[in-house]
Amino acid sequence: MNQSRKKPVTLQDVAKHAGVSRATASLIVRNSPKIAPETRKKVLKSMEELGYVYDRVAANLRSKSSTTIGIIITDISNTYYSDLLKGVHHTLEEIGYTVLLGVTFDSVDKQDQILSTMIEHRVGGVILCPVSESSDEIVNRINKIQTPVILAVRELAGANCDFVGIDYQAGSQMAVEHLIKQGHKRIAFLGGYRKSSTWIKRMEGYSLALRQAGIELDESLLIDSLPTREGGVDAVRQLLSQPNHPTAIFCFSDLVAFGVVQGVREAGLKPGEDIAIMGFDNIPEAEIFYPPLSTVSSFAQLTGKTAANLLHQRITESEGEKKRIILQPELMVREST
Image (cartoon, rainbow, N blue to C red):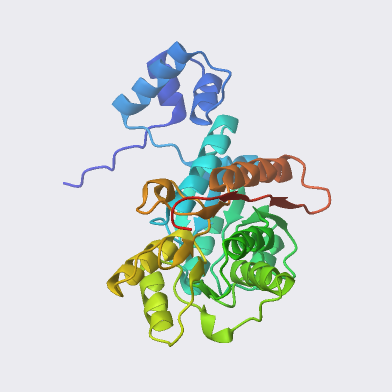
């Protein structure tokens, strides 16, 4: 004998079970702040007891709007992105959005796949920290379906969308100027992808600081690598295999700097004494690292908060000129320099 399939629990069933109207139950599944805490608790308990599952995609289709936001980052293990996520998550949750996270591991294919999935789930907007080899085509793709998008951290030339980032050129310039004031003339620049906008801007600041000090740029002191601790180890090993090694190293990021410190120690040198080391980002570990790392604060959490607020503004007020918000960095001098 065939058993009939169990009928799915409806929102009307939940409302009846909790002793509230369907409209009240609907407001609760949409995270409305208008509902009293006791009522919310009672309805949520009914949902749990009945096994109710809210079909958010169907609701988005009916209302032609969405309270779900997608954020796409390159590396969840990088504390910089963890801090950026805090800023995004806390800001959007307070407004009433639910945040979906996608991690690309700096892969263009993975980025395309995650974006397609988010679009299929009818997200109301996207905060995209693009992979290093991205082009403006990915933004054009999102714009075609009229989904608001904010670029964060990395800028894409020609992309018709809002952007939130840090002044990487100014940050790099102040970092290298600090090293020059300490008496260093042979200053290396290690880590990061040369094709990425963040590397290019850092390079501009590095070059400008050298030029203004009358120091000739030495191409042998520029070694790119993965923007990771492992990348830093590999880059500094290449650097120290050369004759006449530098007295200071400016690193693409704090993670790269941690790897550089490891590689310097492996070579029998003392970080902060034999070679000065400067990072970039000021992630929390930088201050408790040994030696404490001099770096440039790029305010990851504030970047996330700013991007989240701008996305909400773009969702609620779709018209208006695209914005380019550039936050100002801050030099943090510690024992590594």
